[in-house]
Amino acid sequence: MAGIAWTRRLRQAIGRVPNLDPLEVLPLLSVMLLLLHAPQVWYLQFPLTLLCVAGLVFRPLLRQPAVWYLAATMVGATVYLNWESADNHKYMIGYWCLMLCSVFTLPAGQQARALAVTSRLLIGLCMAWAVFWKAINPQYLDGSFFEYTLLVDQRFADFAGQLSAISRQTLLDNRQLVQLLTEGHVRGLPVETVVLAGNEVVRPLAQVLTWWTILIELVLAAAFLWPHGRRVAVIRNASLLLFGVTTYAIAPVVGFGWTLMLLGLAQCEARARWLKLAYLGAFMLILVYAAPFTAVAELVLGRLSGAGG
Amino acid sequence: MAAVVLAPTADRRRFVRRVALVPACLCVVALLHVYRVYWHDQTPWKGGGFGMFSTIDERAARYLRCYLVTADGEIPVAIPSRWEKRVTVLRAAPNQSQLDELAADLAAQPWRDARQHWEAIAVGLAMQSGPRPVEAGDLHPSGLRPEIPSPPFGSPLEVEPAAGSDPAGPRLAVQSVRVELWRFEYDSATRRLRGRKSLAAEAATQGDA
Image 1 (cartoon, rainbow over the protein chains, first blue to last red):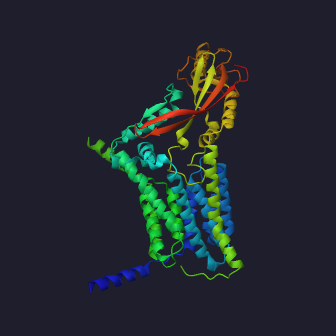
Image 2: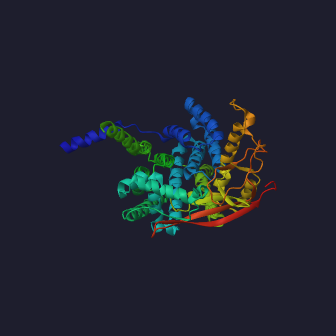
Image 3: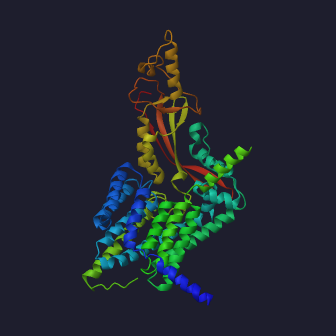
């Protein structure tokens, strides 16, 4: 009896969850994405901000193909002009805007399906290319890449520090060694070789990251490029949410994470209301990941210990 | 997903075109990136092919070293920030002709040692009779030290580009500028990062050296 009552309560709770319409929600979230993660150059920021503000004030504008065509053109042109520094998620933001433009040119009855199909293709292709680059690179496959990254990349410093017990100072020293190698000649130290500090935990940890990353990306590529099917949909959503929740906890690249979660939300089944909320939750979680918790905690603890001493 | 019934002809074609447009763009850009990586040495990290987090050979692993060649030796200098974009492009996709151009532009640039510049100002002020407010003219003490000797090899100097509006100021006697593009590789067995020179360019100065 208790089980039946619990099931009924669960059904009622599900019934109360608002069924988000991706065509309403996604343009608004896209404005947020554009304002916070579009390429940061002066000639893009002013017109793009103007366009976003216009869209927020006059909401129907956000369903106009011309608006998204303009946004895609501006982002695309900026990425083209700054290709040497543009990260891959800037390209994805451009594709995202072009996709919204393309979708809104279709009759209303076809828009949701076009959005879902295009989103699946974009996620699948992005992951397939990511797997391609990793698979052809011997330094990735033997774990060297992640070993180097754990020892040097500041974005991985918290993760490396916590799981491999390497001190923050050692990681800082490693970054300074790289700086010495690349810039030391200006200070009269033309160094050609440096030895990074590490410990015996880093290599196995790097191997785990290496194979976990390629495996999850392979699953994502296969699931999202596979023709539609109910079981495949479960794998797609589970793997994409898992990817978002785990990957960006380690390397908080908010722009890419947000774009992937928007694409995930865009390809959800119309009735999958909890799933849509899960993507929205992951979208917010990725933002939370980027908060400097460790630094704040260290600052507070430092102040407290200072006050205590 | 509610099924959408499409008319078999124009509607379907339009739907397919709209759906295929963006994935096609993604594939074209990614293929172009593959081409650029293999034929133009572009880093897999930059270029839209989604090669990030796949290799150590990122832009940060490629770096430039710049030397002013003088009669007494070579002076290592940092490339001024106004050439930052060109340096970034070179690091993302090294290219001999662009490196030659950068070396030529750096050779056309007058250089000075900032310490000598301030030293010259201090000497100028010390030679004045009695204390007085410093004027703009005091910042250009060219008449006091027309000949600035080149510093000894390897000394860490504060060398910087001399301002174009200060043509007669103290200059370093530079014969040529050499720019080298280096890249480092990581040896996992020894945890060593080893740099190696992969490109170099040298350009002579215009003659006032």
